Amino acid sequence: MERIVAFALALVTLCAAAAAPDYGSGILLAVGPLFGLAVAASHKARGALRLEAILKYLIFFFVGVGGVWGGVGHVFFAQTIAASIGWAPSPFQFEVGMANFGFGLAGLLAPFTRPGYWLGLAIAQSVFLLGAAGGHIASMRAGNFAPNNAGVIFYTDILGPLAMLALFYALGRAAKRSAP
Image 1: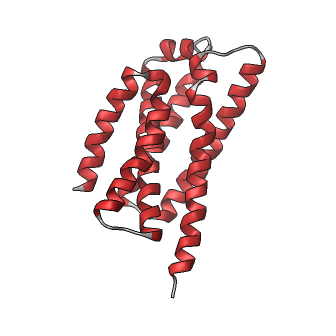
Image 2: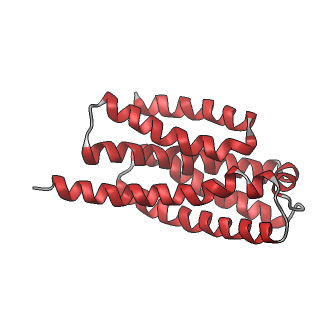
Image 3: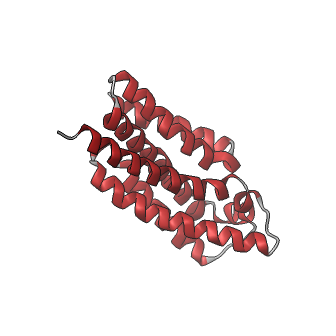
C-alpha cells in the first residue's frame, strides 16, 4: 500500500512542482524525507529501519520524480526551461533531459530495491548535481541570476547530494550499532 500512496503522492507533487516551477526541486527535496518519516512512523520503525525509509523516499522523490520532471522540462519544454535558467536553447539540453530521465526512471525503482542500489544511484546523481551546481556558480560569476540558475535549484543541487550522503553515513552507523 505504501508504494501506491508514494506514486499517488508523486503525481500530486508533480502538479505542485508544475504550479511553482522555480520551487519544484525544493518541494521534491522536502516531500521525500517527510513521506519516509510518515512511512517509518506507520511501521513504528526505529534506528536503521527509519533511516532506510527516509532515504528510500528521498531517492524516490528527489532523484526519481525530480529526474522525470527535469527530463520532461528539458526535452519537451526546452525553450521555456532555457529561458528560466538564463540560457539560449541548445542541443545539449536534450542530453541533460535524457540524463534526467535516466536518473528519474532509476530513482522510481527505489521502493522496490535495497540500499546498495540506492547508494550507486545517489553517488551518480550527486556527481551530476554537484557538477550542475558548479555550472550555476560559473554562470552567476558571469552575471546570470535567473531563477533556475541562482534560485532554489542551485541550493538543492548542493543540499540534495549532501542529504543523501549524510543519510547513507547515518544508516551505516545505525546498522553497525544494531549488528549483533
